[in-house]
Image 1: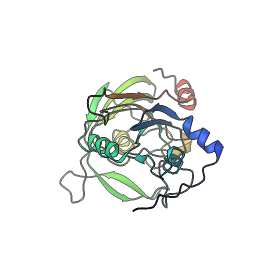
Image 2 (image 1 turned 180 degrees about the vertical axis):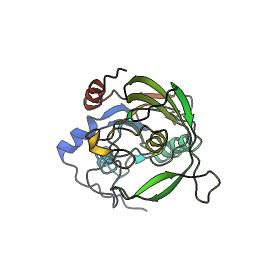
Image 3 (image 1 turned 120 degrees about the vertical axis):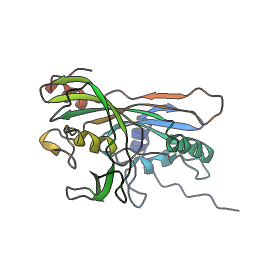
Image 4 (image 1 turned 90 degrees about the horizontal axis):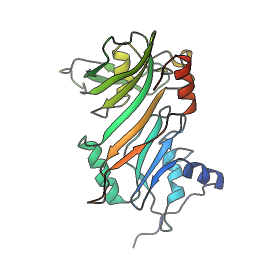
Length: 245
């Protein structure tokens, strides 16, 4: 008989913090509005990451919610978590089968496309980063060994001079996909220290996971349509760039 897993101590302020991020809760699924700077997961499994803070929702036997997808530390917005092993399998399958619909909002600058919408299907290679990250994506011919296909549908919602507010819907789920695709279009995301000008353009990465539409793990239950409002600093940077939603 397996022993219960010990539950690490989570200070009351951290419990209150992570519960304050909740935008949906039921017996199978949790969804959070992740703030900028909070890592989803940290190597070693400890520290103030969302993954570690999920211990605040652990059952008395030590079973706790588990991650089914990730967003970058600097990215804000919707992140869904499974409370049970069957729910994790079902949600993971939704992402794997590309049935989950993800919508991001990004502030970009540079050579903003003249078109109002389009599809970026640039393939990428994963290589070591020389700009403060462990890895990054670089454009590569689709037939090159190791190249990964990627597809992002984008739409310009507002533009002003060399700035734009972009709605991005990734079909595939590659690392840094929206960041790398926006840079490939000539308009990197503000605050992007790997693919753009970093803090010269914004204090942090201006990328927000605004909406997620995904099937609920419980058969016969309505799809989850999760939304997270834009953060205040994102809205303030939009105002500086004379952009509107």
